[in-house]
Image 1 (cartoon, one colour):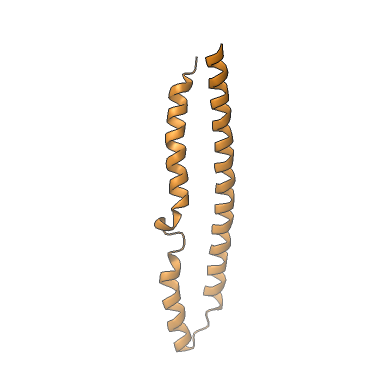
Image 2: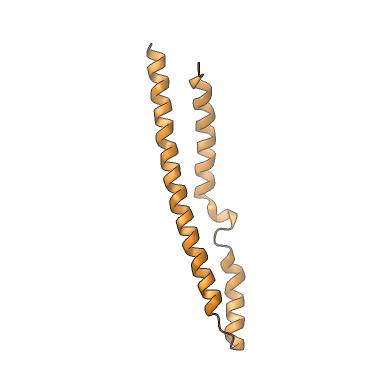
Length: 96
């Protein structure tokens, strides 16, 4: 038999940590590339170097990050729904 109290406690703790981590994603460098790339682009422009490929790569990175964030947020929602189901199962078990 599954111990829903332990499972619930474990999941709540880790889901809270996960949500906090995702909400504070800027601390982990999602957009830090701009601090490195913007100065490079400025120097290139001053020297007359074409930044087209660099701009395209940055746009691809931004698109990939947006997609990853979108998928991650969908999975967080799914996780929260699963937690609600676990809590409902626990409540049903407590009533029996």
